Image (cartoon, rainbow, N blue to C red; front, side):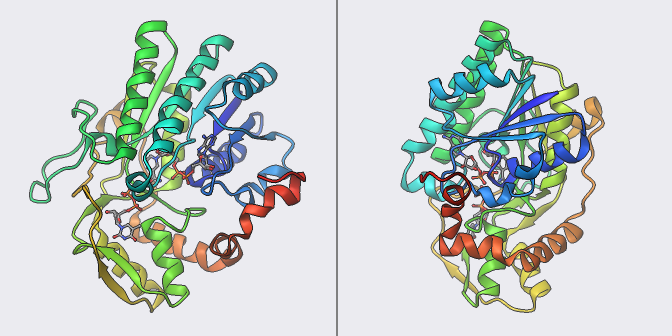
Length: 338
Ligand code: NAD
Ligand code: TYD
């Protein structure tokens, strides 16, 4: 199988590239990434040495470039991770979220139609369901939960999901969608909660907790997300949405305190809350478990220790991000700037 992965220089896409190359010796992986501030080619350093891997620096909203790549590569499946993904940035600058997350999805769907791609998979988020109250632990997001978004980020992801399902209904495009809870693990960009707290504690900077830290997220180790997407792409029913999550709810304060206790350092400071801050996310993964037999394998206690260890042993990776020097990697490798 030849799989085109968009956003493969980002956190989850990068992990997915390694998951595929490790699990399927016969498969080829084509990566398309614009290398925005969140894309880091150093993440793909090992993959770039593999003859089964090809990298294109391209914007998913650039129809000519995308059609050209499809024409040349003729992928069997497309997995779309490429997105603007940070809620806080969507609050200060929504435009690029609408462009990449919605119009970029349209360009990819059109290319799939044009080139008869056998499967298009949209990597979506549980944030499309809005939030759940903190005092109702019995409530979970199912695939039937109405879309009810809070931030420009989640609104753009929900819009893209609707477009994906419209292409299935209108044109019969063979699509699937996964809606996953918060991921953590290696290669996570250090502006998101967990890597920000680890790298800040190591650098002697304060750990900024929004509001009181009572907001709840449902954390899933990134490899478990990769295994779910892989199963959906190969065995999922077209036209279907699958929720992905491992019943791992933690308050933000619990997560930050766990990191502080593993590292033995870190000073928590409470800062102004995020505007429109979602209270609680919690996934009901019954459908993917019953239909596809998916189960997460990494418990939070193990996953968070592994993640902290990864940041301790890969200081160069995140120090290059903090210093900005990772932006020069593409130029060094390929000779042209960005
Ligand atoms: P990320 O921000 O780490 O990576 C996004 C990647 O997309 C980067 O490499 C970036 O360069 C690339 N990109 C951005 N705009 C592009 C464009 N116009 N053209 C081509 N490439 C572009 O994000 P992530 O955390 O890895 O998330 C990946 C996907 O998973 C996103 O669609 C996100 O909505 C979804 N998701 C993330 C989480 C999470 O916890 N991180 C949870 C559920 C779903
Ligand atoms: P984040 O990693 O941005 O993911 P998302 O908003 O998509 O869930 O944030 C996770 C939670 O951590 C969220 O409730 C906001 C909170 N948070 C902080 O308290 N401090 C921070 O510096 C950041 C980035 C997030």
